[in-house]
Length: 74
Image 1 (cartoon, helix red, strand yellow):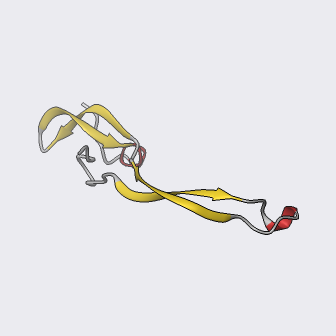
Image 2 (cartoon, rainbow, N blue to C red):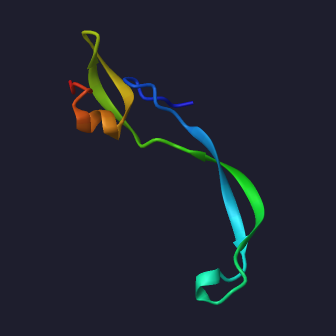
């Protein structure tokens, strides 16, 4: 499993809901959940060259760490 080399952010499990029926605000009886499917929420990881503890290496880093400036590019 891929993880961010700096903050350790990884994929987390979730559920995708399948719905049927017209919603109440548009004149229907309300939408009902008719099925649940397990899915995975993945972080936005980029493979970049970073300076990690004095050594330069290629690693997966999440975009939030890149924007914050925590990943010092080599």
